[in-house]
Image 1 (tube, rainbow, N blue to C red):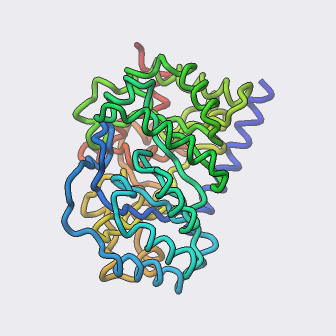
Image 2: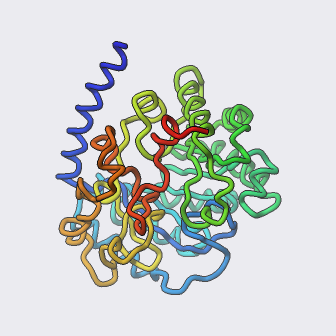
Length: 364
């Protein structure tokens, strides 16, 4: 009981902190979606990325100019560039661009990768470009992973490449990310052992969200019982396990799980401390957020990033961004504020996946 009371007070303090973050909106994470081209075709991909050329990608000079503009106008020591895709290593000028961003402009950067192209040559190039962190995807045991990711043999290639990354002892943090769904939810303990044996620094766990290609595979989505099982696992491992495990950003989880499965209480930081430059130069937030016209805030080819960041993004910073009747009546509204933007249904004006409701209210 004492712990619950303490957490209730702590949650109130964090609510005030979130209000300050919203007012100050200091940029901390800048995603660069290098390309939508990908060498896998994953069943959950929020961007519907696949192995083809996408028209309109920023040129080498355009993205360099964008980073230079941001470096001139803002404090690069406070901004981490998160390189993502598609698959970033499919872009041939990646190393040139990021060497420029780090060595010439002073940015720090990390990358999200499917791991297929992390061979010795590319690892050396990543060192030269001063990459500090990386998150690599493993989505189940071998057969499950290969089927989910759409390429037979990918699991073996990726696990071997992770071993190479760890063995290099160069990078500050090597993380594995796993998206959980109906076909791998019963593989938790075996996957935990695999992560420990790989020697990675942390294991980031997420649940499959109904976005992008996942909407075509909604039979794989976890139900409330599955989600509770996943959260109980993370909670237990954070208390008693040796490997650092954390849950990803999906929604407010209630006091039973808030700050038990991740570092802080829930906050969707889209447009508050997170922005992105999409593959075509559009300015948005997390690349998984729908690319609706009113959510795109400008384009780096024609707009000054700092001006856009300071004067736009209001749709993300409005505390009362939703008129959803169910959300507005919810007792957790002030801690949730509608949940994560990337799972919000903008057509029906409601949350597609209310984690709290799934765990505590839905009857399965």
